[in-house]
Image 1 (tube, helix red, strand yellow):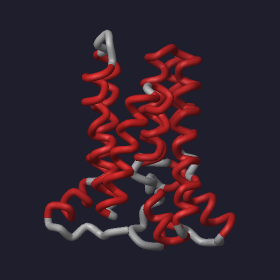
Image 2: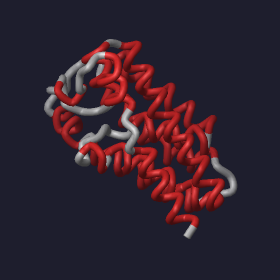
Image 3: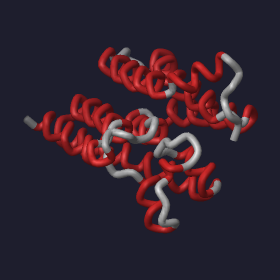
Image 4: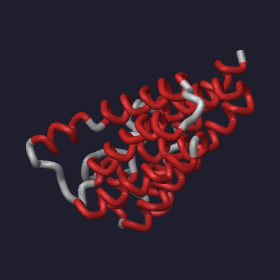
Length: 193
């Protein structure tokens, strides 16, 4: 019962869209009407500037950390993993936004910073560096998140199969949400920031 409660709470937390809130409260605009139509950090940068994008990223990351924390309180590490997945699901497919959310990278980073701070920070720095030098956010996001299961295999001792499965699930969600970006990257058509 506690695990189900953790999942529901986390999903609802994931539904809190900082991009939508900031856009409507401060600019009276819906970010989904601009750029890629995505309710996430990159589109916020394109629509309202870098500072607003960073604030959005921090908000989405913090909700990931909060959900993971609540999940752990309710159900230990199993609750943490379930809540971590569900907050990302809530961000990506929010019921209150007709299932049109973001791509979950910031929320994933927040969850993983709570679960594994140092390996996540390393993956995050690598991802941001790649995005900065290529000016292609999607490739930095994909590599940063994609390195996470590898970092777990390399740095987590003793081996934790549940943690690895958890990382595989959120990595798969990231790949799925970026499938259009992957196609554009293959065809060298991805937009630069």
